[in-house]
Length: 339
Image: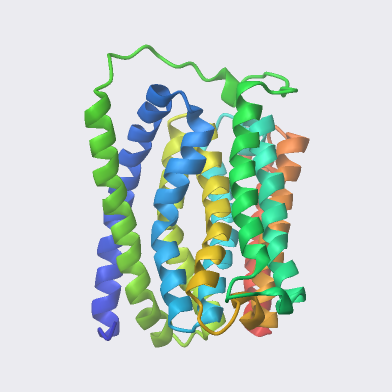
């Protein structure tokens, strides 16, 4: 888009407001759908909310790949994972009963984190084995899709029949009391969810269109534009949904929103690989772009550490892992900017 910087900033601000309002309402509808379908908060967050909030980023990455801009396609997808994982640290600030990592610890949540790390490692394999791509599609892209589907199945099994459970304590997700409510209008719930999903995803897409104008106006290069500015812009729906879910006590929905959205972002690489016409997209990934993959793996690992360690209270009622994630993200972005 060719709009001036002030006009782009105005559009960006208006889209942010729409996402903030829509995200709050979308979270409420998602809780109702979790009850209607029996999927549970975690899978509802991972599949429905994760896909909806990642839609704008998906369009941005696939469009960039189709236009031959592999760096923007990759850094937008993988840079979004880094910032979205850090959003859980912000959500932790909104949950005052205990540290979020302590309260949301569960087998399905940790299983999602482990699967995500494995999926994040696959693009590195694609880079190391560039010659395997046939017909413009690398085998790694197929493996990513298989891994995503298998991960959903394993997570569903773990949620239905967990092999182990964390110790229950005050402030945990399992301690939340669900109040009885009046019967839910199924058709109305799905209809409003669809409208809100289009509103949030559409606003995210609009933000992605004006983000290049803003980032160019402040002097960001392609890698930082994709990994930092555009990725953050298209990830704002995840932040709004995660914070809203945490404040409503829907911790599994919040974690599922972030980790599920992250897994969906890795899935975007497969679509980008199909859209990229200069070979396989992994061959075009620059060494600097790898830093976003590495940063994402480190941040998800720290999150898993928090879910396993379960430190109930920390400085300012924040977990050590929360502070560490924020520090690592800032340091990582600074390092990439200076590289």
